[in-house]
Image (cartoon, rainbow, N blue to C red; front, side, top):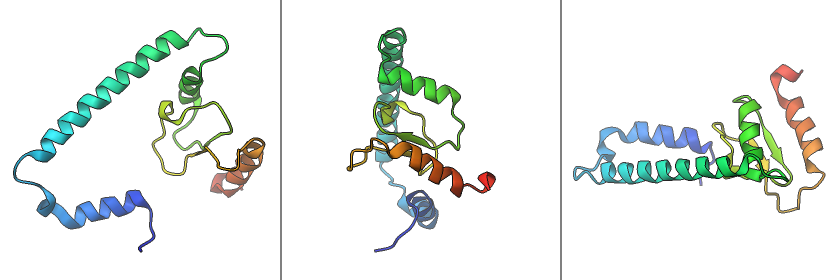
Length: 124
């Protein structure tokens, strides 16, 4: 077993393989088109859900995630005890979401937030 950051490891593996990993039959291009179509479909469904959820009472979890996306910075760490669905959050960096804990999580957020903030260089 080799331990490491998955993003960095995949980037380095792709770089090491270079052009040898490219299939000659165009299968990768077909997969890219299929994935692009699926992403577009998913984006349209999310947009439709947000339109219907924005005025709901109580607040819909997807709308809550949308509101969080609007105000959080790219390097923010989101700590969710309940209610914020990860598929609706825009997360671009590893280790920027803490939630879905097996221990239940209620009461975890405050302490985790303080601990994460104290580890950041700018917080010192």
